[in-house]
Image (cartoon, rainbow, N blue to C red; front, side):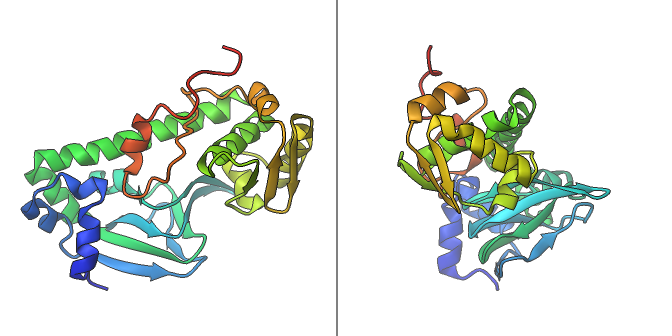
Length: 258
């Protein structure tokens, strides 16, 4: 549906558009519209031409890729998140697929409109580059996490991040089904079960989606979270965006034992 004035006002406050002047904002969202999708909707497939920038306002989206008979989850996005921004800027094909995990509301901004606004307004172009830089730093963190840690360490740090994001509670809820979580952490569902079993000595118990963390200090000592890999920023991002999140130092001022 076309943007209503109330929706346009909300979009205007997103970090990506906040610094743009009114004329630039008008150029950027020319032809933009809000669309609601049910869970399980494929928004695009890797290799597709990208005509729109997607901005997730409600719900969640799984970004993934496949090769031969293998599939993997690259990221699970929560509001407010942009995705396929790099492909839009380069006017290139998508390198990953996108599927809604729950009922989602997404703002779709024509790529041509966004590129025109970037060319006309240097300040808006800088805001786009900041968002891209935030996404890039998030990618580097993910690669370091996958390459430098074993599967149990990745799970331990994931649980600490969820604890921080859920208010430091002893009991947390896994936000994804275990199939998605296993793929996100780069392991099979069987390896995920084994990793949970190994963490029992650190006070981790899991029943369905409920996880109890009874020995947080022991879990941190085992996980050794690092500010150069993990982002423990606990508050909801809302309209803050990737760039703002990447500027945070996180909840942990130092590594355990340092």
